Image 1 (cartoon, one colour):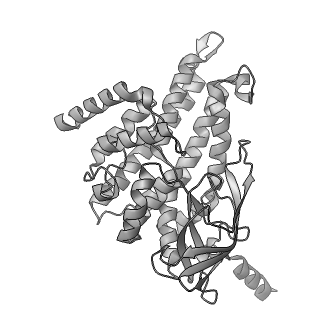
Image 2 (cartoon, helix red, strand yellow):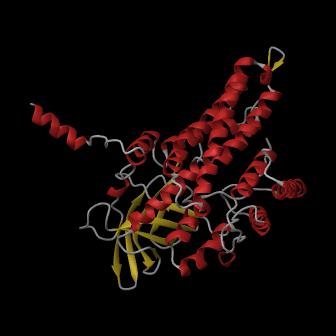
Image 3 (cartoon, one colour):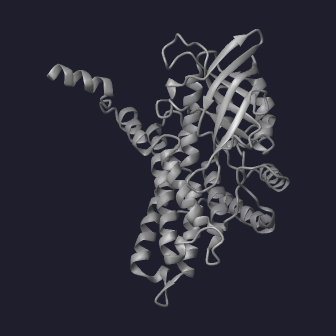
Length: 403
C-alpha cells in the first residue's frame, strides 16, 4: 500500500524544507507588528506559505485550495519549530469574514494591510453584562448624519492597547429583539472618545483591556453587512475565532517541543522519553494531536466539496483544541519537576518560562471565546439536535407550577 502523496507533493515538501532551512534565521511570528515580523510575513506571502488562497487583488498569494499542500505547509513549519507567519484577530478572524460578507471596497481597503501585519485589530464583543449571552450587548450606535455616534463599554478586549482598528458589535435598533438590531462597525482605535484600561490576566501580563466609548464618531460606510444584521456577521467571526483558538497546527508545534523536552529531561538518570509513565502520557497527547490534524483536513476538504457536512467537525475544534493545548503545557511542567514551578527571573527557569506562561494562557482560552460548557451546549443542540438546555426562567416556571 502506497500512502505517499505522490511526486508533485514530495517536490513541494522538498522545496518548502529548503526554504525553511535557508530562511529560518529571519523567521519571526506572533501577533504584533515590527520591521522583522512584517518582512517575514511578506516573504511567506510571496512564496505562498501563508495567505495562500487569498486573491492577489487583496494582497494574498492567489492559489487555489489544495488541502494536501496546506497540510504539508503546517507540518513542516511545526516540525522545524519555525513561525509560519503572524496569527492575530485581524488575520485569522476578520479577513475570512470580509471575504465572505464584506464589500469589495472593504476588502480592497483592509485585507492587504491586515495580512501583511501593517494593521492590527482588536475585537469589541464582550461587555460586563453580555459575555456568554453576547446578544444582550448594550453598546449603542446612533446615526447622526453621515456618522455613527457610539457609546458604551467593552471588556476582555485582547490587544486593544496595541490595536490600530477595532471590529465592534453595537446596537443600532434598541427596540428590536436582542438578536436583531445589532450592527458590525469598523473604526480606528485613535478616534476621539475611546479610553483603554488594561486588565492583568493569569499570566501576569495585561493582554486584556476594558474599552470605553464616549460619543465616538464613526463614518457611516464603515459598517460590514446590513444595518441591524450584525448578528450574522458576528457568528461568522465567532466560527473563525473558534478555529483560531483551537488551532491544530499550534498544538502540533507544541507537541514537538514537548518531545524535545522529554528527550532532554531525566529522572534517576533515565531520559523521560524512556520512562513508561511519561511516555504513555506523551503518546496519548500525540494521538489527540493526530486526531485534530485529521479533523482539520476534514474541514478543509469540505471547502472543496460544498455538499460535505463538516458542521460538527468545526464545532469541536475550540473545545478539543484548547483543552488539548492546556494538557500539553501541563505535561511540560510535570516533566520539569520542581523547575516547572519557576517564574520570573528565577535562574532555573527553562525556555524563558514559556511552559508556565502558556499553561496559564491556555487555561484562559478554555474560558475565553465561549467556555467549554458553552461549546458543549452548542455541539449538543446545534450539532447533534439534542433538546435545548432548560433556561433559568423555564425552570422557575416549572417549579412554580409544581407547587
